[in-house]
Amino acid sequence: MSVRRRKFAALVQHLLWLIFFAQMVVRFFVDLPYNYLLSWLPALGAIAISLVNSRSVRRGIEKSPPAPVEVDAPVTGRWSALNSPATKVPSHGTHGFGQTYAIDITAEPEKGARPAPVWFWPVARPGQAYPAFGAPLHAVADATVVHAEDTQRDHLSRSSLVGVLYFWLIEGVGRTIGGTRRVVGNHIVLDLGAGTYAMYAHVQQGSLAVRAGDEVLAGQVMARCGNSGNSTEPHVHFQLMDGPDLDTARGVPFRWRGVGVPANGETFTVEGEVVPVP
Image (cartoon, rainbow, N blue to C red; front, side, top):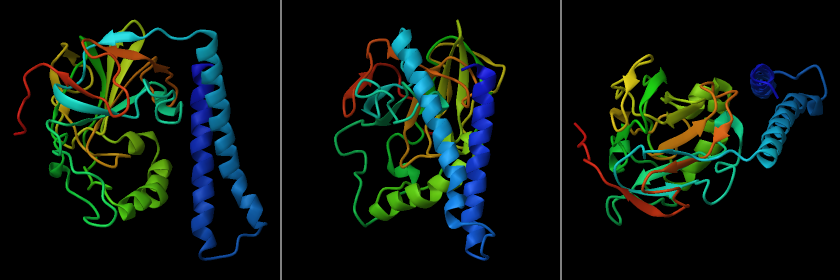
């Protein structure tokens, strides 16, 4: 599927979700002039587009498996991996947004430093309660900044059963309606050259030290880890992809120098100076 077709499909899919959720809201106030089952057609159409896109990506991978691109790690210190492509592909359960080989990592400077999820209390925690919040994000290679934004707020964690239910049933719906940037939150996209792009999601509000058009060097601090977008707790979402547009990009596998690709639950340490939170 060409990039143009992928962009058109993404726009149609977003429009179908908007129509579906709009119907659900309107139905609370008035009866729609058609059968209830018909109101589900937009949602089914959006799901069908997602399935077709996933099949296209899967067949492309089977036909020509992409080679991993080696880059530096985007953080320093001791971290733990979540939703890793070393454990399953696609790592986040979808090929959408170029996430096929994406990884989530959270800071684990020492055992017990990161608050564990709870059933009931506290319902939510501030970002500062997590060691990942405010951690510096480093450029993984010499690159050009294609996109950088940090205006979206950092929300409280979804660290309890109530928080998770809110995250999936209410917030997730709102972010789906809001589009791609509401899902990834504040983010940075780097052009690494040779048709490869790096994306950092959930960046801390107001932490950017770069802007679009800037040239960065490997290891340079560009921003800080936050909890913006579709995130249950402060963490770094990192991925490589073959284009700068998240709606059309396809995922590219990565390897971090000296680390490789850590599996789910695996802790790893990246040597380097840990910059304190100001």
